[in-house]
Image (cartoon, rainbow, N blue to C red; front, top):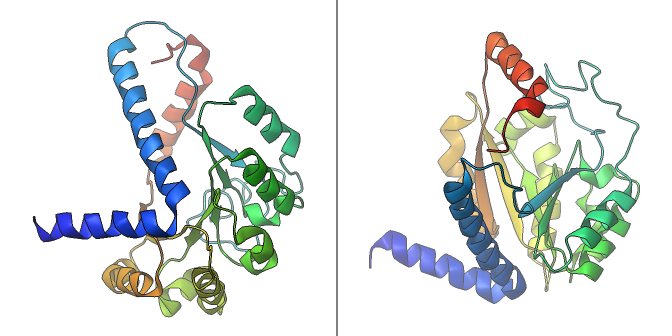
Length: 258
């Protein structure tokens, strides 16, 4: 076997040992994605009703305590900066309950995002819901408020976390503010050191001033014991491309499903 194959086997074995329920969920989700792609290939030219999504994404709130320059909401050209979203509104948990009821038995999974989802006033209630309903959910967070919910996180195998860090301390704090890395990494280490801990990943947004630290960052996260490192590439479009895309979406009612 090649070193890459051995590394993959070791990684899968570690995930199975630490997170057996989540491992089973990942396998099932991969199969579901494969079946959906096969369905799309066979039916792309037909006007048929598409199957239910495999993953549902909810923006719990547009509010956030940070203003990262590349953020689609609070960045330099973000929706909040342009006052296109109301920061004082939250997603009604009843909507999530309705989706759960309508997709029961479908082995669906959720993504909670924002803004900063942990700022939702009923976030602890939502954690209880996904545990009670056994809905695997990934929470995309900047990590600042994880310490408020440790008691609801530990022992909940259905909640996993994708924490945004954009480099080691110097690079990350240049983007997210002084002291951000130390605070977030400390809470992550606490969670990673707990028995029955959640599945924890980190999301690194690749930018010109942190790209040269990618290897060092990934190495540090592996040493810390994180389960997953996601390298996130920014999307760049011109004003003309953005306008054409907006016009295309505005005519969506005329387009086919595929």
